Image (tube, helix red, strand yellow):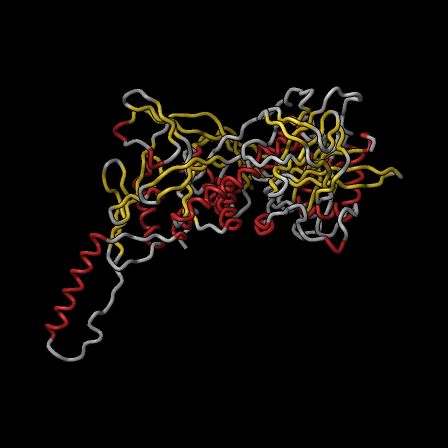
Length: 599
């Protein structure tokens, strides 16, 4: 295939703006998938993606489309739309020459769309603006077109309209992709070969399979290749393209998007952004590689101590298909052996724990998510704290530093007034507000990452009736005024519930957590207390009463003292049990506390 007839593109869109549905219609129009094999969200291969209606893993596909009698190859990379996966999206954008900016005509431009759009512009991509869901009775086509025209500084008439549901405008969009997006630039006589890794997966039989964009040269089966960053050699077992299943080919050449089967079965070798080159004539790695840094930390323990080896094995297998999370072994007095894990964000944490439970049939206990703090102690030593229960006592600390984030919120202007006290409550500093489009505003601000995790997303959606959208970037470390809050159950500290909170909110937070735990924790055969402890004292306390059992129900008639003796015996037994008993906390209690839900 002549490189002049190749077009590589991606779709930029906010969550639930119809990206995967549009990709389905493209596959139908180009005849890539037979009608009898067609299903919704073809490119979302994971069951979890279908349930949540989001894209988690990027899925490339190769389509053929004829324009003016000439056959063209269209390579689409369907990218995740969530903030947590922004680095993966940035690498996917480096693998293409153009991008479709897909905006839901019922919702307008969203914050995450702006963030990814800026990435695409920085990469020098050609942007094709497209409105989706034009068949919806709630569509605001003219209004959204004006928003996009102002944002991109273009003529509104150049914005295309499509419906992923009915297929309207999809063929015209495919034609415009060929017309507007340039073909890949490749060297005519390359001395070696390079390919950018933008994603990968793991196969039990064939090892790691890397998804690549060939930059220079070509790659064939049986070749000795090298990962430029990890410096690991391997022999290519198979090369091919996606349709959307893997389709083996003799070779993949410059400008094409395809896959290489490496046979590697060790975690930590393949990573997004790495470069594959020839072992004999190695070239330098392509620029822009970054090792994804964990943003959120949580400890994961098996519900049964016997499942620890299975959990360790499961983490190793997941790491083979997702190198962006980290884990290391740790031991807790109350929870036993487990792992301290780092994730890209809250969604990433939920996805990994959900996959552990579904794919490996494990019952887990997940601690409260936390962030990284830098603490200067009184002996002038600096510590990096990843886990709240390791946070030093208040009297041993000189200074604490925490990460801040730069945040952008887009919402209807009428919600700006109630937004301001909400931002103050979350310690946010507003830098700039701006009106754009018809009665919509954007707010740029900065705030502690700790506050962003404190139910910020859910409360913002509630405050704005679901209309607000948000994007954020991790910023610098700043001094913080925070303390450790311990939750005690029957005088035993529960490591899973320990958290670091703002000093000014510690009493309110202790009361909230204690009351929430009291609602969800099952009663025992004995009475016990749930307490919130911080700053060396008990701040909040609630009692959980014991199960009541009538031990005299089998007795009829006789002297009342018979029943009194039996009740006294029961009282002594309850007292003994309270001294020795252990409160068993079921798995779902930990999950409800983690997700800020008490139902």
